[in-house]
Length: 392
Image 1 (cartoon, rainbow, N blue to C red):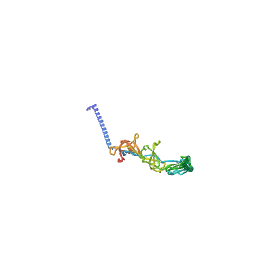
Image 2 (cartoon, rainbow, N blue to C red):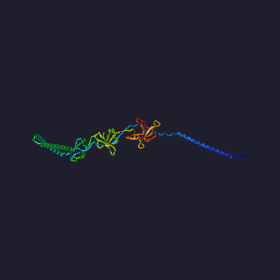
Image 3 (tube, rainbow, N blue to C red):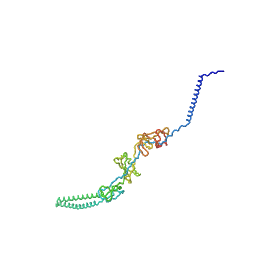
Image 4 (cartoon, rainbow, N blue to C red):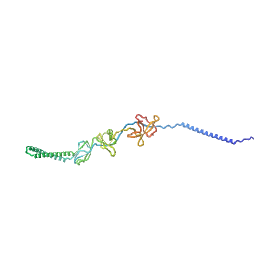
């Protein structure tokens, strides 16, 4: 029999270790290949998928503002119509009202007799004075003749100086009595004139305060008369407008939807303690106004300040009482603009527009509407190109 030689234990272990390392390396290489292949495949698939499209730019409506050296503004103030003159007519002496010719609403002309007092007592007194005057006139005529005769007798030596003096003094006394009676007659004539109530101007009877047969006392109002021509419009206005003569010369007063021309008549010298306004009076060029009717005075003063006229929709709240507008600067492309922000101060509001001044000069483009859709720094495009008038 042939004998076999046994294997060495050391060699066996080396072989096993080699085989183990070889298998592990193969597994690692296989796994790495699989990972690399998977990454490559995913990358290829990712490259094959299109990326998301960029978000579209917000479209805005814009306008170009140019500075103005001033602005004609509209100011309105409430007032009421008043008669140019109002008077309560009364008698200057007491007496019974014999005749009252007017009633409320009647029109009168200057010089018309409105009421008449009973004049019987005055007429009797005048008759008595006239009779007394005739009696004194007869005595005066006799005194004149006596004085003339005494003067002739004295010249011939048949009368004394005392007799002539007595005749002359009697004549002077009678002349004085005539003058006294004439004064009494004049007084009666004045009193008779005062028994008639005369309209002082053209007007309308507003109130009748007495009737025929009433015994009126001195100064008791009988009728109230309102002057019908050139009524006044009384209105309180801003004291700062008191010196604007151009604005005061061009006014319109609106009453019941109708516009009336008016001329400035003057100011009260004080301020209204409650409203702190200056009371102005304007004379209406009409005779059809209703007294105490409310109306509106329209003034158009000029605001002498440099500024910009912007729509109210373009304004946003700012800080410290200021407002802001969103401006536009050129962006990367010819149709792209970048939104900015500028602070403005409101000088005046006129309808749906505001007159402002701000932290910019010269012409400037702003977003006129839809300011809530964009923020400063955003890129936008215009709905329409800006034209020469500055509207987009």
